[in-house]
Image 1 (cartoon, rainbow, N blue to C red):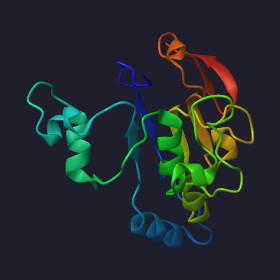
Image 2 (cartoon, one colour):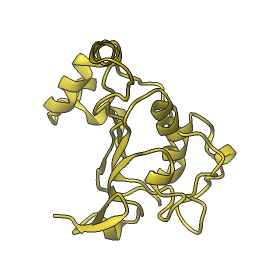
Image 3 (cartoon, helix red, strand yellow):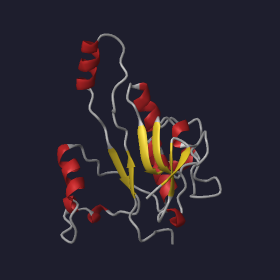
Image 4 (cartoon, rainbow, N blue to C red):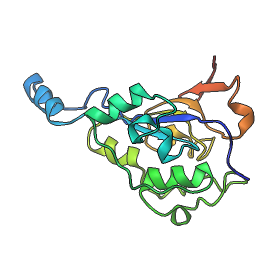
Length: 179
């Protein structure tokens, strides 16, 4: 069975740390005000009913509930039984086999290089992009998050359970120690 008993929060933060604009400061300020900051939260092995905002009375998720209350919620995304294909679908908006992802190992987790990612699209629109957490769509460049449109990356690029406890993390390709 591919399901795990853990819940790993993967935060793909396509965050507008600032917007790249050219010209006078007033033009830059107007552009920043016209565009929202965007934060997307994608979690592993979490069911719809695992959040208090969806009616679960057995646990409280106040911070996630607050984000949802002040932002947009998308509740029609369907996932695969394992993580890499789900991530590939999220990154491209396409059915995972079309992007070459069919597994979580042996190269089946790597997204085809000709696929346009959500990070590529946001970057082209002037956003600064970042991904934080578990990646599991290719470890080395050009499959690495920094090679797929994300300017900032902090997390781990592999996936299997041995990395969830005491992980070795990286920041933009340089290894750092997690805690």
